[in-house]
Length: 182
Image (cartoon, rainbow, N blue to C red; front, side):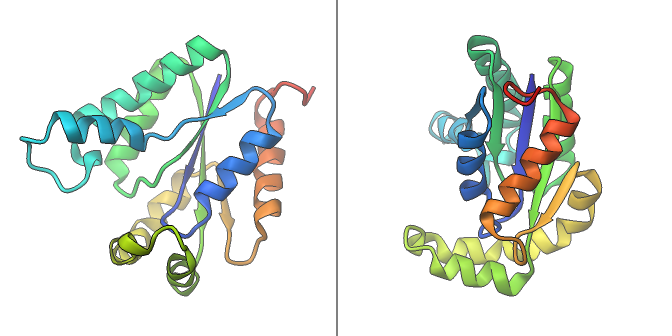
């Protein structure tokens, strides 16, 4: 099975794209790796960390949980999650591949102005806007390795959401056999 990891920072369009992709891809399901972080945050509250991705258990558990979901459902998994530390990404990817899964790393890219505008426009994220804004600069710093490791990079500042999903779907149908695409 294949794991489609949708990377990019806040405002790049990960959640929107993942939702549209799940609707478009027969035999695919959405998995939010952040939920593993929530589990660890509660259970490791006595540990010092500012982001659950810093925790080695998060980087070990995410591939294990995705693997179990794939084994249980027999479905491809779409995982929208920002990962800006290259060594963390390498660890996640290796964990997925070691369990026999193909990994398609999609990076949704946008310039800083677009990202800041989208963050400010999100009506559900008002309480965490400052935190999201603070992640734009680290994203821009990580952009070189992200785009180098990506199987597909799409500029979401100039590409409409439906076209982003279409481009990913086209890439997937060329690189893997998806149900309904044969």
